[in-house]
Length: 258
Image (cartoon, rainbow, N blue to C red; front, side, top):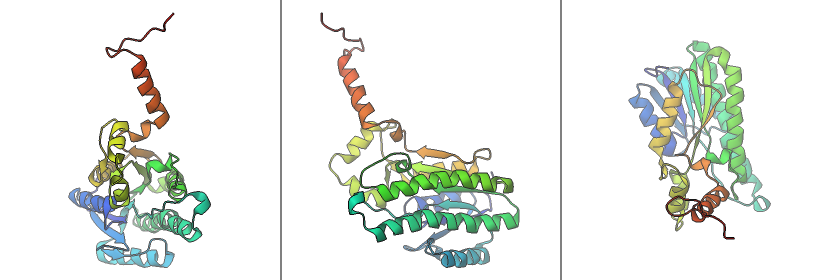
C-alpha cells in the first residue's frame, strides 16, 4: 500500500512508540494525526471515552482529512499480583487498552468505508499478549484481547479492503519500561535471551508498524517485533546452557562414564 497522502490516526502518539510512528509515517508521506491525553498531541482525547473519540474523529476530518490508517498505541500499564489488584486500576487498563482500541477502530473504519479508499490498521499489542509474566495480569489480558480483536476486525473489515494486524513489541526502551531498565542485571538478561542481542527502540517498533501497514497481502496477523526475545523461555535457556556444559567446549558430545 502506498501511504503517500493518507491520513493516519496514531493513538498514544505523543510519546514512545506512538511518537516514533508519527515521525516515520510522516517520512513515508502519510499525514499522521496524534491522539493523546498527555504531551503535545495534535488532538487531546481520552480514547476510552466514546463521546471524546467521536469529537476527535470529527476534528481530525475537519483539520486533516478522512483517515484510512490507524496505529492504536494508547495503553495504560499496571503491575500487581491478582490477589492484590485494585479494581479501579484493572478497569482503567481495560478501558484504554481494549475499549479505546475498539473505539479507535470503529471511528477510523467508518470514515475509511465512507471514503471507499480501503485502509490499514496496526494495533499495538505486546509479547505479554502471548507470555504469562507475574504482576501483569491486567496488561497481559488486554494485549491477548488486542491480538484476537485484530483477527476478528480483519475478518469484518476485509470486505472494505481494510487490513488489520497487530504488532507485539518485546522489551523496548520507552518510558513504560524505564523502571525495569534500572533493575540491576535486567538489560543484560534481556540481551542474553534475545537472538539479536539488544533491547529494542521505539524506532525499531515504528519501522515494523509502517512496514506491516504497507504490506498489502497481510491481514489478521500478530507479528512479534522483539528481536526474537519471545523465542526463548527461561526453562529452554537453562536446558540449552546445561546441554552446552554436557558437550565439550569443542562441540563434541560428552560420553557417559561406565
